Amino acid sequence: MTVKIFDTPEVQDFLKAVSGFDQDGGNERAKQVIHRLLSDLYRLIDDYDVTPEEFWSAVSVLNALGQGTQFGLLSPGLGFDHYLDMRMDAADEQARLNGGTPRTIEGPLYVAGAPELQGSGRMDDGADTDAETMWLTGQVRDTDGQPIAGARVEVWHADSKGGYSFFDPSQSEYNLRRTIVTDAEGRYAVRSIIPSGYGCPPDSPTQQVLDLLGRHGQRPAHIHYFISAPGYKHLTTQINLAGDPYTFDDFAYATREELVVEGKRIEDAAEAEQRGLEGPFTEVVFDIELARTDDPELQHRHKRPRAKEDEQDRASQQAGTAKV
Ligand code: DHB
Ligand code: FE
Image (cartoon, rainbow, N blue to C red; front, side, top):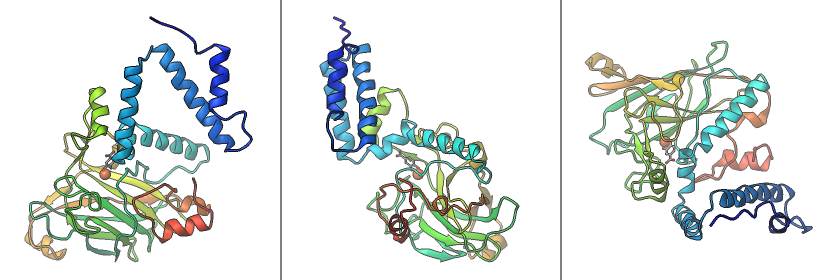
């Protein structure tokens, strides 16, 4: 049985009532957005003849996603994070604010307040003894190639099992999360471990949705960055390590050609000693270019609910400079 009722005055009036159009209170933009969202969904139910069983099973998946705070994990898999990046890239291009290292998604696993290092230091707590030592280094420059001293380079990544501290309670606090302030030459250099790729938990509601689409939930080995400095546009980006089976098959669509970095295995003892390391290691070099801006709003990461807030979040909220 197929019925088509979406275009009837009864359904159209009903949608307006449900969206609060006849009410004085509430938020005008929310009403418009909800009205459009519900209209699209009601139309879909009509067009695809969605059964009550299908509808209630979708509600149950949404409940499971909510209970497990999983929607932030599914969102990159459904391409929303990358789509927002595409829109910000297009807006930058229109405002002639492009240039510099490309952005890519933040992902759901950032935690504010990581320990700060001046120029260099160590990110791992030494507990991950199976892991390959990583020497992660680079220079922050402006788009004319001038070094930026005192830039804040926030780095976070997974351990050798693909887990992130805070979300993986077996790791120590802030393991593999640091803010490094660049030295006089704009350089940062840290000792860490080579991360593994990340996979959505196989029995999670996120994976359940991906299974329905015939898709995997794997990310290549990657390292997240926030980079900021006064007078420059805040950059959210990440690098993907070359040679991972998922480097160009990332379920979160974060890979960009310019952000694929090849690690270099170094076995020479003198080179290791120079960096204060005991044995062979893999060097990963990522230089970053920041675009100039005088707009203070663009100098901070955008506002979003995150696992923890820090001074920067509170200050930008108080100053009202944060973008919602
Ligand atoms: C997801 C996990 C990540 O580590 C990441 O960088 C992006 C997305 C996720 O589970 O959706
Ligand atoms: Fe990640």
